[in-house]
Amino acid sequence: MKNFQEYTAAQNMARQAIDRLKQEIRPGMTEREIKKLAEIYLIENGSTSFWYHGIGALIHVGERSLVSQGGREYRVSDTAVKENDVITLDLAPTLNTCWGDFARTIFVEDGLPVQNYADLKQPDHQRGIEAELKLHHYLMETVTPDTTFEELFANANALIIALGFENLDYANNLGHSVEILQQDRVYIEKGNAHKLSEYVGFTFEPHISCPGTGFGVKRENIYYFGDDGKLCEL
Image 1 (cartoon, helix red, strand yellow):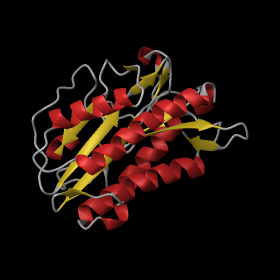
Image 2: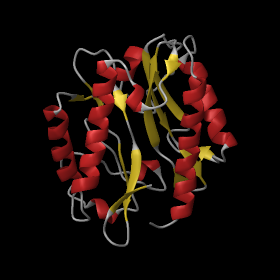
Image 3: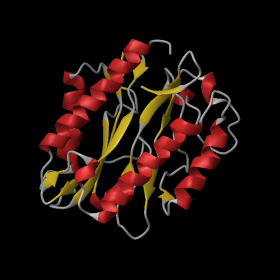
Image 4: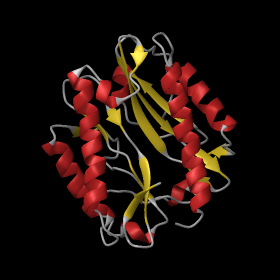
């Protein structure tokens, strides 16, 4: 992966920010407050800009975790975290021209963020993150340098349905290529016959929900192919 160290550093800025937020989020905090903290932490961690429409953090709390919208449409709200809640966080730091693109779902149970998924108590929370982990495991186990964006789109969406979930993405895609300019991205979508290996890396970011639960979950990593052709998580 070209510029591997820079991409790794940018991605770690986001990881560290979310790890910090997992310790600090409490009931009563609002989306707006969480977004502000996330972007402060990204800058403290070394982010030189925010590549996604100038937005460093897309935060959705509670039922708003079902909302999928692009950067141009995103408007942070004053929705407050409840004693039992779900928060999706999608962070977009930049180190020079190299992106970080990292999303996680934080579950709040009994007034505290759950630090380890194994400690989740609510079955709907457990089922949501288990589906995300299965999707990312499927990606790692099946994708090869010859896999195309549209093949991954079809197969991953079929798995989402088989797991009893729905794809919430406003464009129905599942990720995109990693570029220097955001407008150059190509997507994991129907009709994109390019191979995943043609690009420096790509994101995989299923935004899904189990119908009737009232919340969405999201998990995003950057992936790339190593010199041996194996898929790696950045």
